[in-house]
Length: 77
Image (cartoon, rainbow, N blue to C red):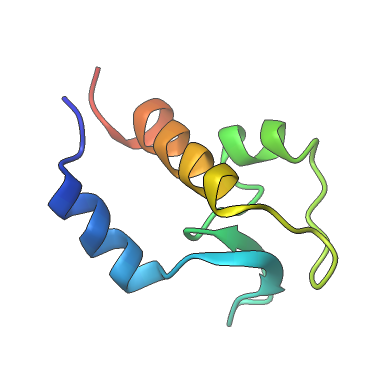
């Protein structure tokens, strides 16, 4: 089962898409559509390093990361 386009739009509306790493309200480095190193997909994507204000991604990379996180960590097989 795959997340619908409306579902992805809703999640992006809630999370936003930030292309430079920042500290979220819980002081956790975050990038893209809410990606943190707690995600195995994001951990592998960034080699375990997210540096606020330094780590940057493109919109295409943010889309790729979001899709991979949904598929591998949230959507049922």
